Figure 1 (cartoon, helix red, strand yellow):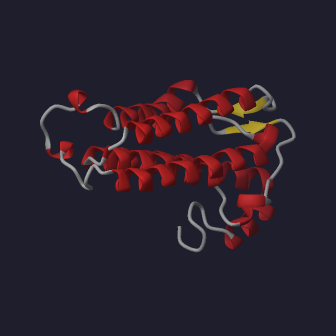
Figure 2 (figure 1 turned 90 degrees about the vertical axis):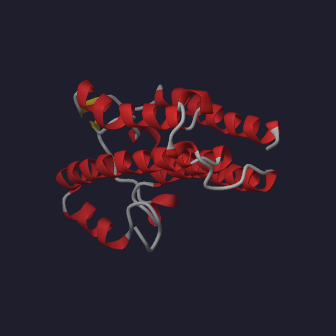
Length: 192
């Protein structure tokens, strides 16, 4: 696979991280947030494990998850890169739409607003959708079963996080949020 494909994937992640850091500075203050230990165990640790699984082969050793699920060609690399950049656009656009309401962990913000425009018209958690697509693209580029395991770990982590967010948002917005749930899916329009 071309080094350009791998470099382009790293650039996508660099853009995401840079945008997250810069836009996070503008977020509203929190009225309440989840304990740091819980954030680490349920969100950061799974992401660290997924990044580890998507890293170089030397870290993994000999195991079943080291084998390929797709061939390591430029064609599969372009497919993976497409997932990655589509996910980047969805995640950054959705993050932009949230504006100052965004938080890295499950939090209640001052004057919290319910955003239902843009991608939020179709799905309730488009940032997670975008990030899962980025991880999936990364897994296709790596081409190993361990990459798919990493995507699965991220998906499970985000699923637990979105369930907790939805409970808090229902408590905060009441029937308004319950109606929103009935009109939208969590991650994939019309499916999940």
